[in-house]
Length: 338
Image 1 (cartoon, rainbow, N blue to C red):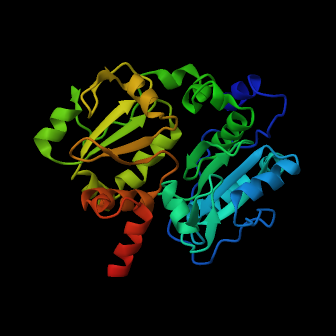
Image 2: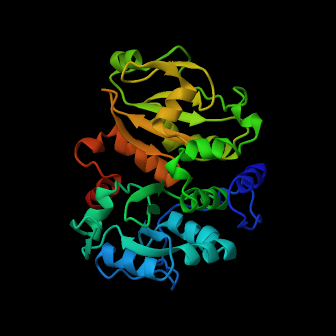
């Protein structure tokens, strides 16, 4: 709760409701929904050309566009709509400042980006690397994509993101730095991380680890007093299927605010905090996966439950990224094979 109050102190006088807590990650099953998701009626239907959509939004006094990438049976999308979009203060704020355009990541419908490039909605989703739904791209008044969110975030984090973009803090600082100014000091302590047998011990010479094992690497950026981190370890990372996949990886856990020495996959000698800053890590836990050559494959930097985590781990261990750079496409092919 402290995070929200501190954020509001250095933003505008517009205050959001404080009904949720920073521990509200959502308790839900992330299996695909049995029924198609119904989106809010006030979402805008695109004209097919985002330049025209932006022009209409600005003429109606809005600050820009939000492109919402979703899919009809996405449990994370349902949580986003139920907990974020349908919260009265968030809905009011969004409708005042933005038009939201819904893009179906599987649709063959054409859409023209503001730069004039024509895509199908599916191609447009891949262009923005929407491996996780819901994903949001924020376009400012000039039609420039200025901020992106991948996956579902609890309401307090989404409120902070809205303030960060709308009040143009992105022009002078990263979202990570913006949030850090509001985090209680205890989050920076090096103690309090969840200790697990599958995490490697220091020293964290990641190039040597990759060279010696020829296996992919998962780096888990966490922090102390982190409820979402606790949930990750107590639930999906305790499932036998997930543990089996994790045991086929190199796994390293870093406190994202610590001065722990680390040599990054590209050979840079640095600290966990500096590396997390370079990578733009703002959410704990953030899981970043690297191939055996040290190249980033994919990251999970939002709420993650069992089925999403298991899908990503299989994608890594089965080297699905070599045949398809888009996780969603690869998972669809795997279901078709079965």
